Amino acid sequence: MAPKPISIPVPDASYSTLAVFMLTFGLVVTASFFVYEATSSRRNRSLAKELIAGAVASIFLGFGSLFLLLSAGVYV
Image 1 (cartoon, helix red, strand yellow):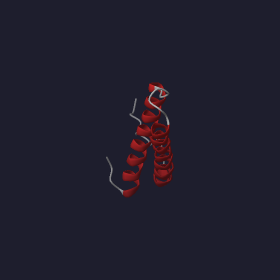
Image 2 (cartoon, rainbow, N blue to C red; image 1 turned 45 degrees about the horizontal axis):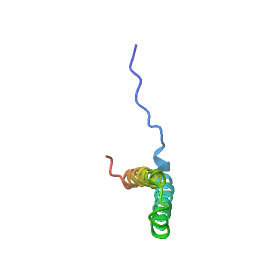
Image 3 (cartoon, one colour; image 1 turned 120 degrees about the vertical axis):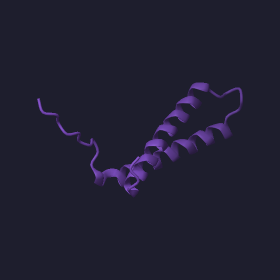
């Protein structure tokens, strides 16, 4: 059998759009995390909410940064 060439799952034209949306969503989740930390008392905080918000923000900011670099032509 002949090997099949590897195809990219995301078209090159979509990199900048994905970067903007993922970075925006990541920043919104980060802002909501900071508001949650600033407005809730120490007794009412939930570790699960903090971990989930931090993980979601981290994932979206990470992939948003990746697509931003890809749209700028820095292939990592």
